[in-house]
Image 1: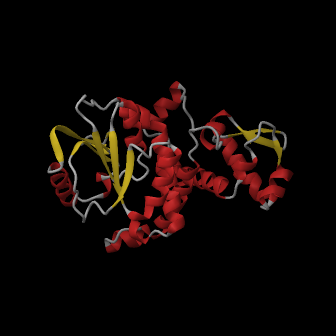
Image 2 (image 1 turned 90 degrees about the horizontal axis):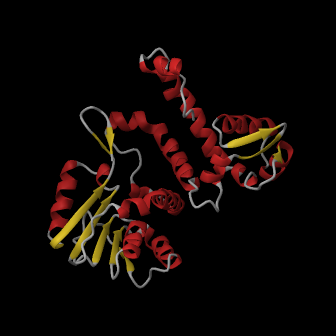
Image 3 (image 1 turned 180 degrees about the vertical axis):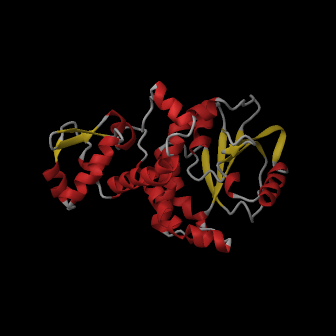
Length: 289
């Protein structure tokens, strides 16, 4: 990814002299697929060490074709995720940040989820013509749920502290409902930030075991619990001071969102609040978080 443009390059980009569709429809596809393949085939696993690894060794450890590997690695070099010296490679600083399993900021599961999206979007034209969703969550198998769950965990770990820091909790706020919270990392961070805070995560039964494992790993069993429930079809039962709707409403229709918010409203205590975080687009086509 290019971060700095020269003055001439800025002019070329600004006045559409540059053929943008070449990047949008061609080069980005190559880049994305190279990243997906590098994670799925374990190529980035081989490159995690400090020492450079030869192409021959990468071939031996992945069982892949030598020239095929070279093609993928050259794309990763061009994207600055991998460094090359002679015929040997290793993860760059950027690569170690986003792909090393011990970095704390790895996005491996996000890349694997992107691969699933890419596969599903092979049927995009059919979906547009028919009006049917490309892929419904209800059709996910166990492996797809693990990838989806892992991707959402990866993304939440990048921003949970910052997001929760911006929420104006009151001293009277003692219980959070995280609607569609899946992993519950935002709820857990809230409990760490506010003394005496407890949280309930409401999401589908398919993610319950993974969520409860994560709650145990984060040592939050006494303050956070998972409730297996379809929050779109089953009613809420408790009363809450704060309700999170994070990355939920973008996937629902206006009518469904209206019904959901009305349902939530009846379970918010006086002085409480509903916090929404999602991706929106204003009338100028500018993205606002």
